[in-house]
Length: 129
Image 1 (cartoon, rainbow, N blue to C red):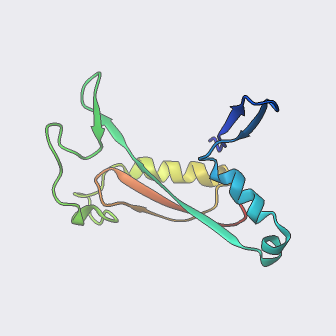
Image 2 (tube, rainbow, N blue to C red):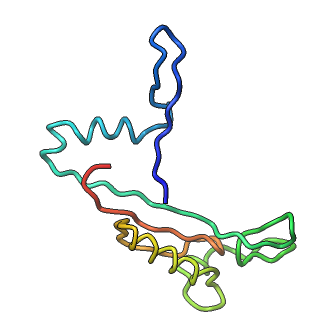
């Protein structure tokens, strides 16, 4: 498991590493670590969404649960995956969930998403980043 931040080399007279424009974690830490916010004990949470892929040939893959030559039906039945005919990858998602808990990731909830093979975790709440 890897949590990382993006940094860029600033090739100016100072020649130093600076946070990348997309390094929101760095900027959020400045806010979370400020005296005012730290005193509030602010909660932080994110959603982690991902799609499981199944191999259709040696060189191609497609979302798990999708037909090999087309698209699945409308999204409605897949959300939260109620029923064996709409659940794709639950065993993998459950094992991933257990691995996250073992690693100390605080997970408040999980569910299948609107597309076959798509899953989500709600991470947190945690204090700060």
